[in-house]
Structures are given as structure tokens and as C-alpha cells.
Amino acid sequence: MAKADDIILFVNVVDEGSFSKVAQKLNLTNSVVSKRIARLESDLNVQLLYRSTRKLNLTDAGRTLYNKARIANLAIQDAEDAVSGYSDEVRGKIRITMPNVSAKLVLNRAIAEFAIYTKRWM
Image (tube, rainbow, N blue to C red):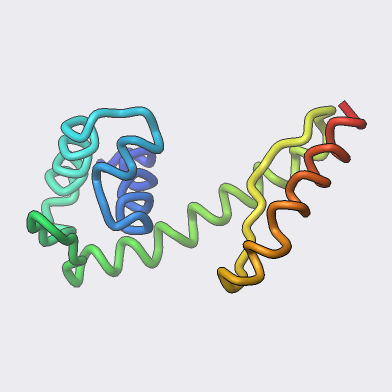
């Protein structure tokens, strides 16, 4: 049976498009990420990714798993976010989508103001 943390790792690999980016993000080695994805493929008895030196591509099975697992991952995040309001700490991810030009003009100041605002409440 596949482990949930390996499936979540697989979603991260697909989202980032790279084993090394995920390894760096999660403070793991590339070999650990690679071995865990290989273990997931072994547990499921199916190849999930076509690997080359420059790119990762999803197999049909990989695409199916990714689409279902991404939804599950978002549901887990939503569940965590729902109960995080009961804590005294400010936590969580803020996702912002905007053009680069707007980001350079507006985002740095907005983040600084947000950081100052949240520091007052701590």
C-alpha cells in the first residue's frame, strides 16, 4: 500500500517539475526524493513519471494519480487551515498571482506592511 506522505511528495515533484527543487524545499537529498518516488511506483506497481536529464513527464497513470492526489492534498490543507484559527499564532501560506510588473511595484511594500501588521498581534 502506498504511503500518503510519498503521494504528497509526488504531488510536490509534479508541481515543482524537479526532484532537486523539492529536495531543497523540504531539506532532503535528491536521492531520498528519488527513492521515495521509486518506492511509490513500486507500491502501486506502475510507472508515474518519465524521467530525463532535463525534464519530468507524467505517464497516464501519473497524471491520474496527480489529479486525484492534488485534490486530496488541497483538502488536507483546507482542513489544517480551518483549525488553525483556534491557535494564537499566525500561520499558513499566502498565494498571490499577479503580473511581474505589478509585483515589483506593489508586492514588496504590501508584504512589508503585512509583516509589520502581524508582528503587532504577536
